[in-house]
Image 1 (tube, rainbow, N blue to C red):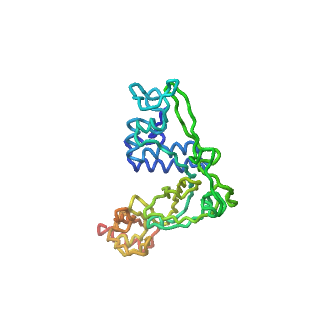
Image 2: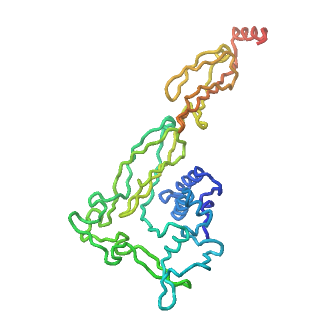
Image 3: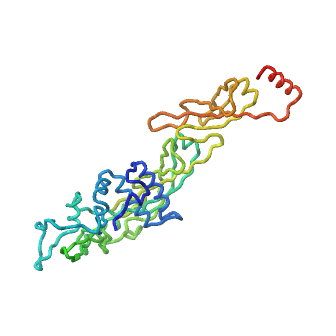
Length: 358
């Protein structure tokens, strides 16, 4: 059955790259195997969909041919129509069957030639808590992560120091074993990882005692995370190849989910910062200077004479920094209490104001 990568990520076919990125980060965090809600199979499906749809060339290819070009089953009917395909360039065995490599056929159809699958380590997901101020102006964090990394004794070779590493006799150093499958179209060759050397193509004469010859082992690693200014609560930071290692392969990625503490006064709306302040009724009538506590220190806010209840005052350029270097504004909502009980003197003053039409 053909795969629907758009459906996997829960986005429309005309979704922007940013929409695709956000959908991937949300689902990757939800289904990551290390999470209580994790689902390894769905995590792989989400990652596969993102790898295709985040790449303009691959996405265009997928939109035209479907998932067939990426290991799927092709178009309607679950297969390719090879009628009219020129097999003259392939070898024919004594029984009249064609012998060819499946990877070469798909390479010719979809471009790119034969692909070699690169081994990849597991992704890691961690959560960090930052203050509201740090989310606005950015910060750095040092994380100590226990993960599978390259063995620092043998540097990933899997062999004891000053000992030789010999070519694997099982796969002749290729790391793969070819198997033949017959079909109505001929003999297809497929490749699988060599069980003797686990795809490395070489075997140490004497295994490293620290890692048992695997080339990797569990260890603590300090990671410095740069949290950008203006990050939102729940956003994910992806650090490429900072996940777990695999011998003779590519490291997985590190995903950091950001959690932002609430501020006592300020809250965020886009690139603006909002706050509610309470002043005295007399200050609302007569006007005053109000000492406003901002994330960057105290600021004098001028309250105009006769301000209305709930009126919003704006301080330009003191909000959230944007990628373009501009900043949002501070929006301050002014409120004031209505007195319940009045002294005789206060009541007399209010009555005099009423007589004057105020």
